[in-house]
Image (cartoon, rainbow, N blue to C red):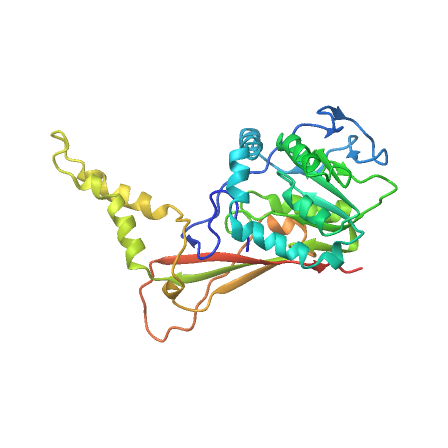
Length: 326
């Protein structure tokens, strides 16, 4: 179970649909190790597929939001927020180090490597070679971190969108993919699409994926405290003498606005009213197109009598270390 900046995983109380797309267009080209961009062809070493549109380019993405996305993840402060989430980082460390027998002597690709910490974990677990693929300018910091920790010969940092990256011809395909592709409620930010694309483009048919599976859970909840906190947010509009102005005509609309917003926060387990509906996503098998339209039918038949619920709570978990079918 892994967190990222501004994300709270366990017991996320959600009331409406997921957020906007966040994936982005990265600098065109793979970094040559000296801050320059190389235009290597497939088979010329780690490089780009330059002759045709990549799967990334085929997606309908807003240019301004993609630029903002990569700028956000190029900031060390945002990377610090993720690394300082010790549940997230500790879970990845345990998943990799406790499975060092899987990593020993293997070729690993880190999808969306950020600072390269997961790549370093893989190297520490005995990987023969790790390709850390990072589209943002954070790739330069990742390279510096790897070299400072004496793993520069084992970890190769490449600044590229993973959809454009190809392994050297002599390597062929990777044995293992590692990544932290989960957004709010698992699928926000659309990083999972890049993770699945990397599976198709770079991973051996029987290769391992860390993580390999995620499950979204949805259940009704009852929480008087949260409900009261939300209700209080619109009380401002009940004022009838705000500098001589009666604001109350806007109260109903303001109240509706409050309850239309998603709440991202921890929720007490005892607030969950019944068993959740669960929606599994197997990263080793799912097609990228299946992630474009996710529908989770909700039907709860455990109640004998009518009940009052304050909303729907949604959360997810992930599993590590399954492999594809050969």
